[in-house]
Image 1 (tube, helix red, strand yellow):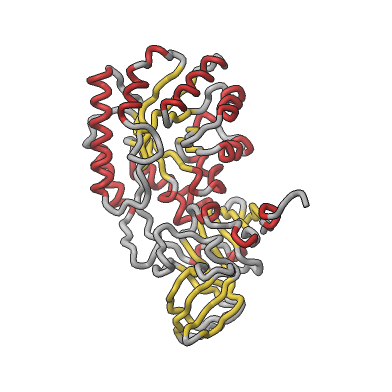
Image 2 (tube, rainbow, N blue to C red; image 1 turned 180 degrees about the vertical axis):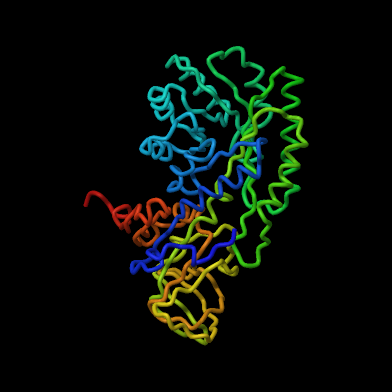
Length: 399
């Protein structure tokens, strides 16, 4: 997951306008291909587009499947004219009108997840009323609000002859992200394997597929352990090989695929010393940048200094990096030693490909959304989204 500034397009590094995101499409494509190669024939890849919707089109060209969790994400897929047979339409709540429109428009080309008995009944009823067969994955809960417990899954499977228009493909399971211990993943896989064997012996049901989100760990901070992909996948493949389940295994991944492929650039706008502490005020902040696992800005993410001139003083200074929001919580890094900074210098944060562009508190204080750039060798640097004001979302429409 090593990244260097030298590999980034000079056009982006030379941008005068900040803040801005850059997503490297080539790096993302290569990463998917690498992970697929390391997995071999044992598993397929599903891209969870919530990690970064700007990478969805590229993912559709090289991943086996796309996980879509909302009507808005589904509309993005429609606008991009993506193949619906690759789409798994997930989500803890599904609106009847949205499901019906999807069925009428795409005639069951996509897969649906069922996350409750009520949601299953809604899908069954719409399938009958629209005379459209549907394919379903039954989401098994990991002990939270998502999915169903084993008893609910068993109830659906035992009654499967009552709804021949539905194809129950198998089980979907995801328990969380940033798992540092592979042993926890192995334990989950074994429990899923045992449940699938029970479905076969008790219900006479053989699942075609297990869709599983491993939640592999992504090192965001300089002190995090960084396990080579080759070593990680070798250990994970051994776990897959130990399973009795012989059907199709699809791995749902988002953060693990996208995090290394994104960057965020923000500029130094003010520097001051208050009570012996050196504060740097940036034109970005926590409304744009969100690292999973950052606690009170105590951890140091990977970043580089892009000085406004070629001359950069060698003296190292301890700084607190603060954003532009009027809240004491807008701190990106509480203490970091950097070469002496000047107003106009830019900071480039890496490993920002997952979630920051959508998950940060972007509407707080009505600050503008950053520019978004996509890069590929074939097309060069493309501005995919201009800086956008957000004040219209935070003001009354009728005065």
